[in-house]
Image (tube, rainbow over all chains, first blue to last red; front, side, top):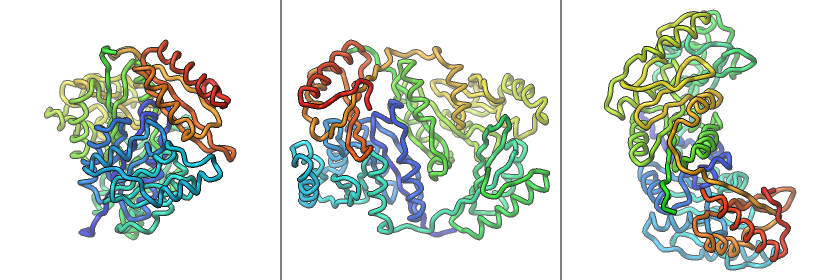
Length: 251
Length: 251
């Protein structure tokens, strides 16, 4: 397949993830959303709330991917340094975005007024556009190929919703699963042969231990759905011929 | 504080995380475990099942951290390429570890025997030691400052358990939380001042939206527990003086 593959990277900014306090949910959420847009999540980095760490990750990843997303660090408090760090990465200044000021003024009209801390949420790297926040007041930010999103997953969900259909991508990857009470080590050759026989698919093997028994799910992926279906049919037949009971969709 | 800070990095290897199919649980688990050992998780990368991606991440992160952990890609199937990639990163060959062969032979004695695919799980970068796997057959691997762990979280948990107390570290970071129905934007100055007044603490602010209301938890972190307690007491008083009801431990 010579078709263009569009890729994105994600930088998760947050001491709370690195300390183990908070279970990240944005990686899975953004990965799934990107796939629907026909964009592949190629790599993720989780970095601390330190400017140098953010700058390094942002500059490396924006250069080698079509899109770069960040989550976290865009609130009103002292530990929210994402905007400054990305401005530094791009070598631009920081300014108040007039439409963000307007939005925040309106949002806080009935919530105690626009304080100096709240006004911080209108700060953007110079030249940036806004991403609509359909959940709370503070917008997301788009500059060049960088999309700056919230850390709170349901706010990021609203921002992704606002971006849906606006990013150029390719064909989404189609993933289909089968599974059974199979020890993956017994079928390793079968999996390898099925992947080889269908050029352009990737087969993932995901073992588990449940109800005292080992099992595995096998996921076949490719942007070409017909190819996925052919590979899946062949793999299912090979496993059934070997005596396993296979469940479509995985178990 | 001039005391030595010990750091670790984590490379999560897995297309299943990047596709959004699987919710990672190893970051939070390893972060929490490291903290008990007095080691700080400094950065995480999630990379695809591609050798170049693994080599790049491993070589960058092992050089600038005391310890490097990896999760994923050590099973018996064709998509398990972690051992080969780490051997390539280190410039060493791959060999069968005699004790791993023994362990696997014993483990599979009553489970269909040691097939060629299963024998793959005894492969290690030349010169490596094993990390005991108390849950299933295949061991983890230690070489230089690199710890190669399973992708399945409960197997990794068993491997961490086997490593507990064996890694040199410093003082664990103590984290204590308070919280309340507070809009973080109203108390941004208070937080900033509390952090400034207690050098050596980091205060994180984690807003949420629940039961139709906004609230926030504030986490004070430092290896110095007395300092955390003083900062927390001052911050609590400042917030209560401002009219908020504050709950110890967070809400």
